[in-house]
Length: 245
Image 1 (cartoon, rainbow, N blue to C red):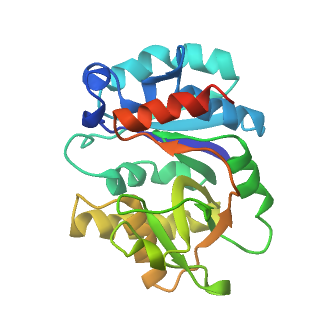
Image 2: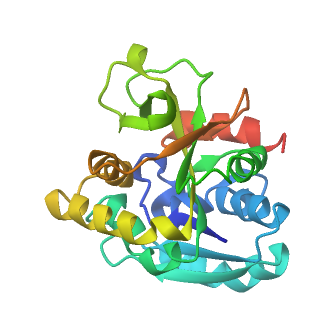
């Protein structure tokens, strides 16, 4: 199993930081970036390889590749997304379809979270699960969150931002364990998703899988501090959290 980070997005709501950097390289604790935190988590759970999907300002990631490898002891493969500024992240994850075949822990490049999340996902393996989503069942939800409804052993029934928060089981935090056996099915669902609408999220690809009868499981992460950094308010929260890890 290897790590996988989606770091191709432009992050326009974080300008001026993202005028010259992808969102994953915006500092959150001194010089430490979201990408640093994620690679550090991967290293702590024993992963020795990771892939990073790059697109917007990808040269900044290429420039830091050797230093990141040396710092975290993780061999990095960079995967180019040629439509990073045009299409949403369903296509971005599909670009890494060959990587999925190795089995991955996927982390969004804008999610500040502790290594306990990865450890929770690894601990949830072993009962035939093929895809396990890290789920926050504690946080009070609003309209912007990627909300999930689950149903017992059937797992995820619905995943979308477009639902009444009161009906949701919890929020998907942007970290997933994907076993190699799920790779082909997921890649096909992602392709169907972005061909239907290139503005769709990879979570819409998850929904496509569920609609096809594929079981996607969840692992509640408990009461931990994390944040998805979309704007300057989120960045301030991320900086308050990152310094605690």
